[in-house]
Image 1 (spheres, rainbow, N blue to C red):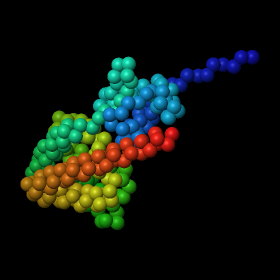
Image 2 (cartoon, rainbow, N blue to C red):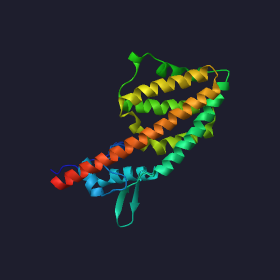
Image 3 (tube, rainbow, N blue to C red):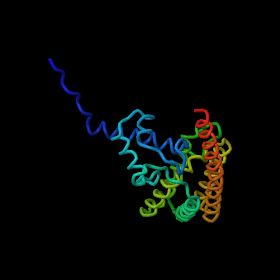
Image 4 (cartoon, rainbow, N blue to C red):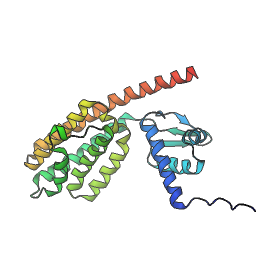
Length: 239
């Protein structure tokens, strides 16, 4: 008696696997296991992740669409290099969008849309989140919700695009404990200025907050890349 052929995975299962692979490869890029500007092969990643090429290719195409990776004909895949000049321009655009949103919010008669942000950021030190990866998502949400509260859908859309493009370096902002404390303090001052309708001060505080973050993540990114390259050389020489 012959056994029945294995049932192929459903489309839903395939999509879930591709998403899992996407998250894994993206995290490898974020952790500099795959260095900016470096090449890699599909064969290498399928072996490292223990998956077939189909979900990997789906994941890589998604990452390519987002600008994290690229492909060269007959040469294979590479991690997109970090262009700090472009990153600076994106941070400048982010400042324009967010300061405009803050100006509108400070003039608004109703601040109820900011209540969820108050509940998260205007808390006692003992209630503050200390997990870096959680705070990373919270910080991104804070800035996104400020723009969303200004009720301009095109601003919200463009801001989300900027956020997606700077995420590669921005997430490193919370690798130092002092940056976690500073983020709570700075977000709190920005919120209070908006709620008290001190628009000019809110703009000044927000601009300084983003500028400082830009400076910090550039330094941390360069340090992280240097450390990753050194580790890669040591691994190669000992192998």
